[in-house]
Image 1 (cartoon, one colour):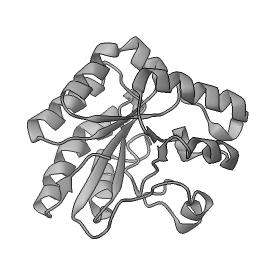
Image 2 (tube, helix red, strand yellow):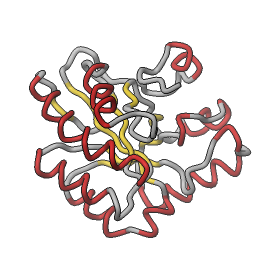
Image 3 (spheres, one colour):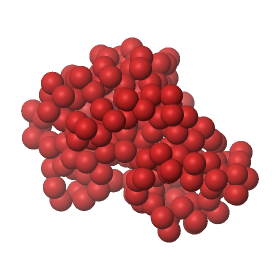
Length: 202
């Protein structure tokens, strides 16, 4: 079952993480995980450029190595980057030292202060160390774009219905998400702007 909103129990398990920003301002934070890749990320950048929106991309190091020009483009266009490990590791399945080394390998490419664990899962021991060096970013709106059981229309509904002041919204710039992202992303931006939201960088 896909969970759109981050439940209280999950939040309480990771109290060191940022799940949303201030609820007092009508600002929201658009994020993308897993890129950069040539099949998807340039299209997303074109949409963001056309609609004058800045976003934060949580990049996988091996994809950065393969596609350095895309990384340079998103930085040049004013977007922010975060660390998403070198090889998209599952923290729960990875030893502490191996995980930390993998994050550090990615950090050598990105030089960022933001980190998001792949799958939103990491061991407490891993985050205890990482929080000394990064702001650990989770989310409060998970669009479900990666889930083949979710239609493009439902993906859009997820993104719009559950967003509120300070929300951190997750999309993905990977191939399996692209159909839903193509439909939902531009429509979501337009609808949330009509509601008075401003898109900001983490």
